Length: 120
Image 1 (cartoon, rainbow, N blue to C red):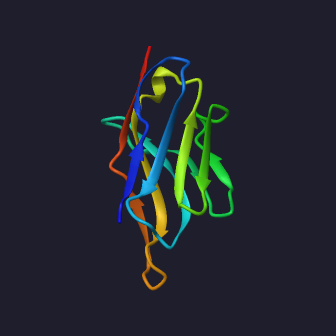
Image 2 (cartoon, helix red, strand yellow; image 1 turned 60 degrees about the vertical axis):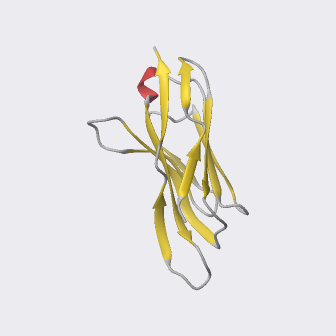
Image 3 (cartoon, one colour; image 1 turned 90 degrees about the horizontal axis):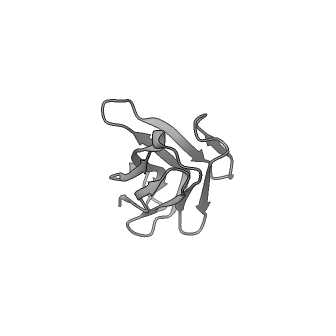
């Protein structure tokens, strides 16, 4: 099983995008899920995370503009990005602490990344 992102693309400054992330097949459960982003040549930074209890955390640069949500039945996570700025341009990666079957262990899975470009 792996995670699959969708929803990236090109948007103008001030616009909005919604990213989605889902397991490639049905899984038994998920704990923390979230999003990181990375600009080439820079370290990966946390954008937002959400626990299985619904507690959300955001990176300082996106607070008030981005909203993370999850579907507790499908074990998917989404990121609504509003008021996008040129500095939000990056590759966005979703991750999830997932258990595939009741009898398997927990694994932290990552998506392959989706490109977000915000024109200045």
